Length: 157
View 1 (cartoon, rainbow, N blue to C red):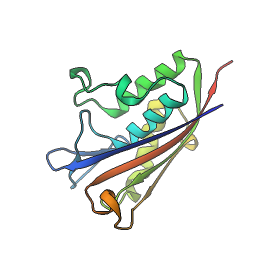
View 2 (cartoon, rainbow, N blue to C red):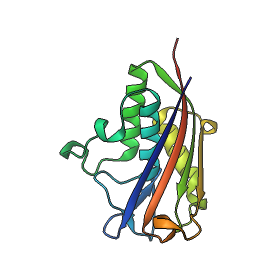
View 3 (tube, helix red, strand yellow):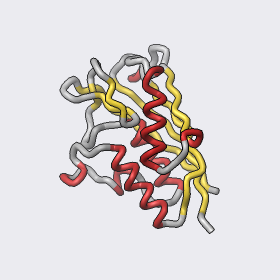
View 4 (cartoon, helix red, strand yellow):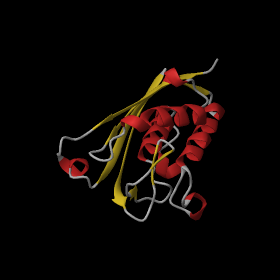
């Protein structure tokens, strides 16, 4: 068994849609980034890559034309293949989105479902939680959104 931790943060960008965990959240500024800037999917991908010793998100999916505007759910699918090729399977994922706004409550189930589907997992293997920063720091000042993920993987065979 191996544990990985991932973290990602992006600033708001009013000219983009807000996508978190593969869910498009209406009526809110999006996030700045090279791909779709999905902080939750990025944190999960980084945690999985790190747990397997496969580098990090930036080295596997660099800011190149190939990944410009890419769906982070597609990035998770690619990470799933990398893990399988390296001989690992995912045991579980626990994640937290940190945002003052928008409130995530009504979107968490869809996020969990999207991540589960992309990684070939059951819904009970993926936890998506949300919290605020109680007005503290860059997330508390509503300058952007952050996400953390902890994963457990195991070697096959």
